[in-house]
Length: 270
Ligand code: HPA
Image (cartoon, rainbow, N blue to C red):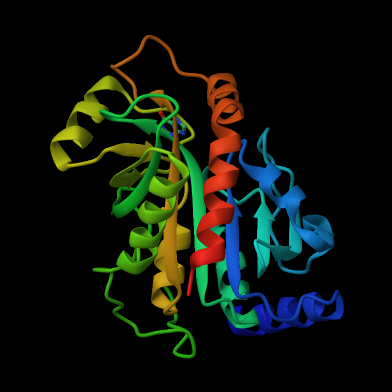
């Protein structure tokens, strides 16, 4: 089946579940999925039920799509995303973003846990731009003209307007929101200290194993994007040892601020 037919099939399936007109997509990273439980009038669909959908295998990722009202907006939230390191092709990693667009989402808030290069554990960082070091591009292959052009512009992939709103909202809540460049790798290994030194020279402020593919596909289709990284650890070389338990533990600590911030931003987005 062609990618376009798959998108249409999944869209039709979600329509039958009552998921008809989301305004905003929400992709919730490691340990950040709890926000979806605050969605009102929720329609919850298990990933396993959804045709053409991937499977979520990572601890801290629930594997549910939740649609409903959050901060007065119609949202479609993904509790758990698909990573390239799980063995998913890029088409599967980015498929939910295609479906969000097909259903009518005009914007998406993409969140992740990331290692800090400069920033320390507990920092919330609005992504200003990214560096794609995955060695992949999710738009390789036939271009879907219905979504966007063959050679899409990426100069405002992380929409400046959205970031301004995020900064204003954070200030009013007394939450410190940093800004910086997210460098995307495939994982699943954490980086070597030499890699992190190289990434620092390249201008990266955070490093992680997600987000870049989804944002490329969102930007291609003209969706506005806000990216937020929860810095869970100092990247390799700045601290002794890296492990996923720490990533989950730190997100646990900052999730109240994170949830409050995302809800308040949603309320303000045009
Ligand atoms: N590197 C890559 N991905 C990550 C990290 C890291 O240090 N922390 C959380 N996700």
